[in-house]
Length: 101
Image 1 (cartoon, rainbow, N blue to C red):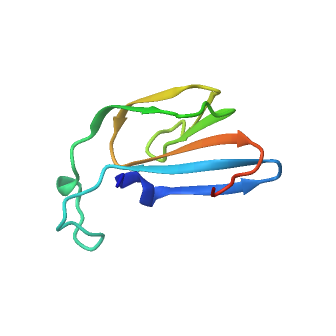
Image 2: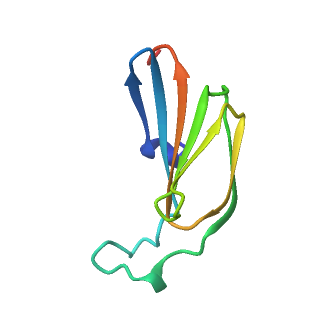
């Protein structure tokens, strides 16, 4: 039971597909959008390493917290994220069509 499976989606495209994973630094159990304040946010997670079972054709890291919010990484076997404050999106792109089997 991997926690990130709930935050991972498959996106079919013409002749290729993407696996999109939302990396979330989850707040405490009693924190919700009605009572969330900056002092209730968890500390950043440092040096998050994501390794891929299969090397994607390209990897894109989307970070709404940064001025340069889209980082194209190309075809890499892993991604190291120095700091995960709240939320980032990791997009892996593969050729072909995704099969559930």
